[in-house]
Image (cartoon, rainbow, N blue to C red):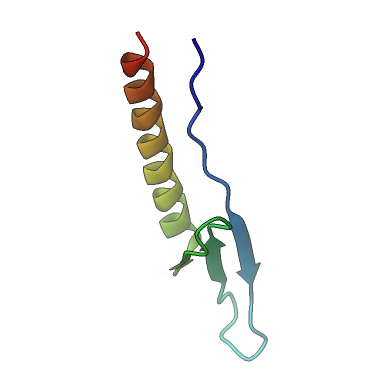
Length: 69
C-alpha cells in the first residue's frame, strides 16, 4: 500500500527596510504552487501559522492512513 504523504513548501522572505524604525522586520511566506502570499507582523505570528499548517498536514496524513487500512 502506498499513499502520497501530504507536504507543503514555502518561500520565506525576511527583510528590514532602512527607512523604517530600528528592528522593523518584514516577513512574507509564499506558496510556490498557488502563489498565495501571507505577511506577518512578527516572528511569533509566523511560528503560529506554521504550527497551524503542521497540524493540518498531520490530520490529512492520518485521514489518508485510515482510508488505506
